[in-house]
Image (cartoon, one colour):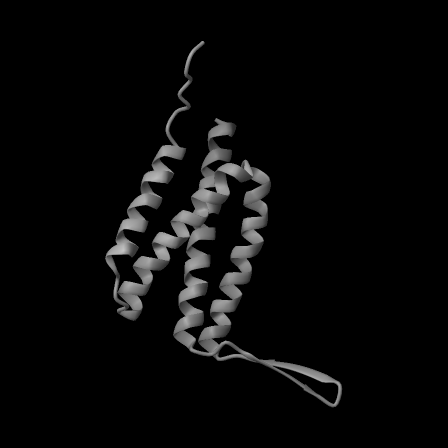
Length: 129
């Protein structure tokens, strides 16, 4: 029972990470302000639009979550899966939110990523003894 609850919490953490990463990317692009850093008389100031700032906060949260996720899972397993899912979700968000064109190469690439994620999650197949 406890092990099942831990696994559910791990999945929830990954889902929150995925949401925060894509939300951060979308909001930063939507805010159209990459930020500016100014140094004046020894004072450093950083300026960013409100929407881009929310995106930056989401992205920082996603980074902190990912550092925890990396500790909880095998890196060789979780990194390709999360990266692939973020790529797919970003592609979908760019089409839905920003009405960007999706090329045939992008669709084929997304399909290849999905197939790769499925293959990575299949039970291990042993050849020979």
